[in-house]
Length: 359
Image: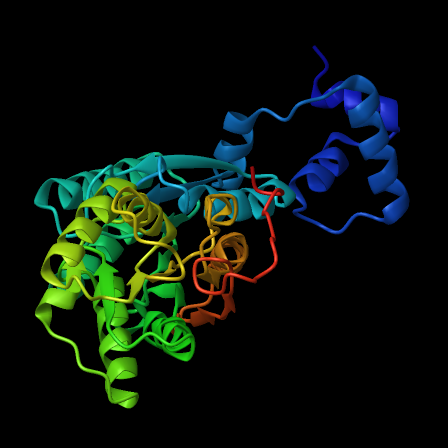
């Protein structure tokens, strides 16, 4: 197995020059960089990550904490994160709390994962949190204190905006996006629209509930508590919620679901009950994951920049990693834009647009 001395000898440079090229720690002329890189390829030299970590105080890893990697949303995000990490020469460690929002055990697992990643000396953490809004200030004060015990490990929130408690965040405008989605149902002629949403108390679920209510009120349409049913973003919960909606509000003519997975569960119920989509009931999802484009009928949805959100969050994290001397640390927030995607569950004549690239 070749070592750094062999690379230096093959390239005709000093060991320190090889180190500077590999670690990007000092300027090296383009000519010498090419000679070192050619030597590395010819010798199939692999940098010892432990040795690099001891010398640079960098582990070459970042942690990613998600809520449900078995879902169809987070793999898009992680793919975006990984593309940036690979460009930077980093590896990612994926951790999953496997819990629902606000669940006490899920929060404990989330805290435990933060501690483990901090103790592993990762260089930064991207996370999706289960913490309820009313607990966030005390919770993140503790998390940031733990991060600073090691080497001031930066953290960036995905999906939710925690800039108010000093956390860099890449997030989505659930309120406005929902208004645009519900408005599409209204524009298609719906008068009695139900909403299948996420867990009660969850920030992103509350944003969508408020967006739904606001759009209904803006259009002079009535609603009541029976028209809002809570799920957990799984297709099973969408199935059960749709059954409840049909029982409580049998004359419903439109449904907005808080994600595509719940919309698919709802679609199954409507087929079983003989309700035609979109003729009898129009159905709208949220996220625009690949499966929404291939079911029959294909599901209209609101496209969320999932992969791009992962990319932007990773870029934000690496800016903090690469500029640790920045003591001001004013929390930065980036709101990701979305767009309406019209398919056959709301407009029967909509063209097919299978999403094949994400399979």
